[in-house]
Structures are given as C-alpha cells and as structure tokens.
Amino acid sequence: MRVLSGIKPTGDLHLGNYLGAVKQWVAMQEDIQASGGETMYFIADLHGLTEWIDPARMTANTIEMTATLIAAGIDPARSIIFNQARVPAHAELAWLLNNVARVGWLNRMTQFKDKAGKNREGASVGLYDYPVLMAADVLLYNATHVPVGEDQKQHLELTRDIATKFNTDYGTELFTLPEPLVSKAAPRIMSLRDANAKMSKSNPSEQSLVKLIDSDETIADKFRKAKTDPDLLPATMAELAERPEARNLLTIFAALSDRAPDDVLGDYAGKGFGQFKPALADLAVAKLGPIRDEMVRLLNDRGAIDAILRDGAERAAALAAPTLHGAQTAMGLLV
Image (cartoon, rainbow, N blue to C red; front, side):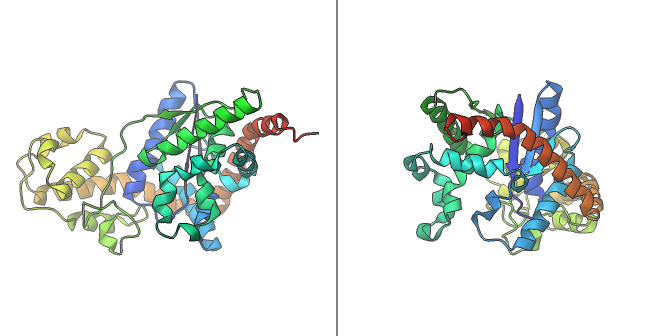
C-alpha cells in the first residue's frame, strides 16, 4: 500500500488547513505505516504555477509548507517529503498522458469551471490541464491510495480513466489504478467572524482565521473574540443545526482534542460561551503553540529544509524512474 498526497504552497497556513489536511496526513503516516505501507507527501509547486505568483513568494511558500508539515509531525525519515519541481518526471509523464487524456474528459472537470469563472478564455492552459498533471503525480509512483476531498474525487476518477486507456492502448499493465482513501472525516473549519464562510486567508479580517504562525496571545485573543450567540450550549450537536458559530467552535474543539463533538458537549451542556471560549483558547494554544515553535526553529535553518527536500526528491525520483521508462518504452520513444 502506497499513499500519496500533495498540497499547494499557498503560504500563511491556518487552522483550517491544519485540521482539514495536515493533521489528517500525520494520522495517515501512523496508520498506513503500522500496516506495512508507505507514505509520500509532496509540495505541489508545479500546480501552484497555474495562477501567477511572485517567484520569491513561491520559494518562501515552499519552504514554509515543508517546515509546517515537519513541525506538525510528518517525519522525513519515515515518509518521503519533496517538492514536485525537483522531480522532472512529473512534468515528463504529464506530457505523455496529455496524449492519452481526451479533451471531452477535461471539459467535464467542474473545478476548472469554478476557478476560471467567467474568464474561461483568459485562464491559463495549466489551469485547464491541471488534472492531467495530477494524474501523472499519482501514476508516476503507482500509488495504490490517494486521500481526496469532495472537490478532488472527479480528478481521481479521471486519473483512473487515463490509466485504463493507457494500459489498453499500449497493451500493458504499467499503471496501477488508484483507490480513494477514506480517512477520518476532515472537519470543515469556518471563519471565526462568519461561520457561513470557510476559514480563508483571503478574508480581509485577521480575526477571521487563526494562522499557524500566530503567537499564543494572538491565538487566545482570536478565540476569545470569535463570534458566538447568546444561548447556552445544548447536549448534542444536532441541537446546533441552526447555530453556525456555536457549531463551528465545537467542531474546532473536538478536532483539536481528538474527541467526538457530542462528547465535548457533555462537558459544557448548559454552560455559556463565557466558560467555553477560554477553554477552547487554552486548548488551541496548547496544541498549536508547539507546532509554531518548531516551525520557527526550522525556518531559521533553511539549509536543513533544503536538505530534506533534496533527499526526498532523490528518493522519489528513484521510485519514479522505472514508471517513466516504462511509459516511454510502451509509447515507442526509446530507440
């Protein structure tokens, strides 16, 4: 069992990124390796180019993302950590697969329509072709399982279609058809100022999100000032269906403490947010503070991070080489 997952180097990671992805990856590292499998995590910097980004910012974001993964618990000695750009086989295989994928398949990708919006003609070719590069990312390592959210399920289905067509067209069994990995349900973390919107760095209010780089004082202050309602907390999450701010804070508490939301409510039912929010603030500081401190330490030693990425890329490239060679051979490119 080989599990592969990637994350774009967006910079300024926040609590939603951590609970929705990074924390899940750490759990996968433990679970998959305990069963004899292996885990690979990569910084998707090539995917990050689909929209213009300042080159210096791209470099800084890649370093920051790597530091975040390691600080959160991804162990470079146990998992392969690398950035796409250091393994040219990703781009090489993507071009080969471009000649297998069909335009009609890409036209059905809903994420391109969402991201391009009304400016479809002005979108980059990279944004349109994003799913083929994603297919190459997965097929290059013959990953058996890929953790995907709702917005990526369609892309994994496309990956399987491309693999099947390649194997059929060229009479080979080169590519493994990956399966979606269903892990613990990743919580959907909403804004601390408007629980009807996802927590996002694009929100102009700094109070709306908790950044992983925030100080203990800032984390606590943001939770103390988080928007709530005047009612007391009930005994079950079902009773919070029409109370989005309260539901969001309970979700965050449960995710940070690795407890079920209803279990958390067992401690706070009948109490107000005057008691709940300070407890949540303390919990968040206790969980996020050590991650931030380790991030800061790592970011002060950029050479060490570069060495980790270089080593990870060498290990990844060694795994990728036979697959790329097999694809080139199957297509008659090696004379």
